[in-house]
Image 1: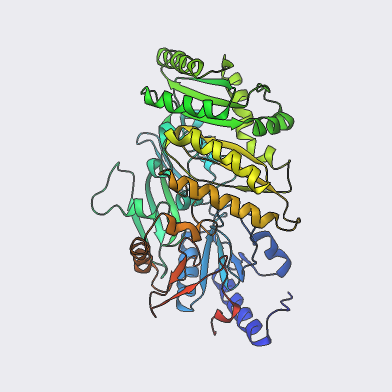
Image 2 (image 1 turned 135 degrees about the vertical axis):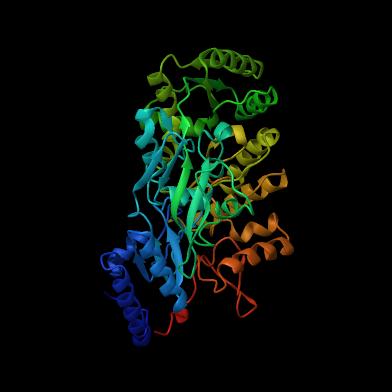
Length: 494
């Protein structure tokens, strides 16, 4: 391996560290310079940083052994699932170990009587449903990356998906976790029971972005497949009208399983990509899915169509079969991939706003697109106000990345201004870290960092993420971390 930027003493310490890790996980250490390229980023590809080494454990015992070693030798650790994070949450550190959990991919127990499953963190989101669908069950949270993203990463980011409007995020479908702490100790929060006494540490861990510990086992809630489901494809003359329709449907007390909006830019992209048959004359389309008993579904579908027509809908099509329903969803589920064919690079934002603010915010995003000179496709979970503007740019063009990042920050600032939040399911990571003061005061952030220090007094677990400055829990003071990177001078002296 070749590390030309490091002096001989640092290279020697690195070699000693890698040798020690290989003794702990003999067949699971990646250290060759070329091989590390595969791990130098997550799905937020604007930032890249090769890790010091990658460790791929196969068991919880190996995870604990690696954490114990890193804690004893002051080595930073970045946990990683499948690398589908969109906020830079799994961005490696140049002087840290990337702990990849993808090989821990076994389903340990399926308990249909208690409607739950116990799985390792590397099991894919869709893999859980595939394991139980023959018995009429499924796992409800369904991120667009569900074929690849892992349940451990879902817990770390509190992932959602298309059907989170009715069935909730990961936190609403999680019963328990086993967490490996920095010193290698493993603790359990929750379990198969529906509720547990004491502090809600399970809720604390969910969405903690790898800052408190490493998830080594997950117990998830399984749901019976609804007896009937129907999708509506509604075309609107403006994206504002589509947003108002969503607000009106919820105000009527109707809670569809899902409500998704795509603007014309996104519709044109998916039609060119997979041709789902969306109306090209629409400025925006709304996909609403109703599920439950058939009579309930049909009644709710009629009400949604009535509200849509009142908001100026150009057309409303209902699915006639399960195959037809899947066809309607095909374009929405392929939207990110389709948009990726339009421009070399893309930033996918993740602000969440009150539904009543949808028309105002969508209008302003369109104005910002012209101001920053970058196209944007709007594809989002309209039912819960979780926006996913896709900002198109070319990193090879001078100034494009800077404008894209400023455009994204402006969108997130607007979300907070209208009473929303910085993230709905992608997490804070690196992308939104420096915007945290928009939502939280210094006192708020200090309290959050105190929680981190209680779990991670050495500040070794995923440092440089979430907090604008990293509290030095042991020595006092704080150090600013730029793009999740710390200098190689912090390598342990082995």
